[in-house]
Length: 25
Figure 1 (tube, one colour):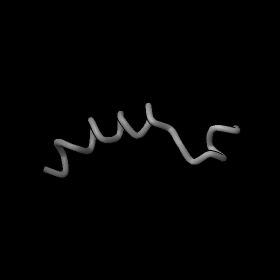
Figure 2: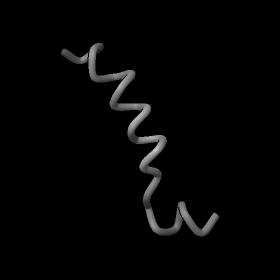
Figure 3: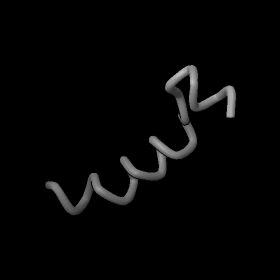
């Protein structure tokens, strides 16, 4: 998992923002 080593998952972070965004606000 070289991607995890770079500390970046734009797709996953995007999904989390879409899901958690409405919940937090």
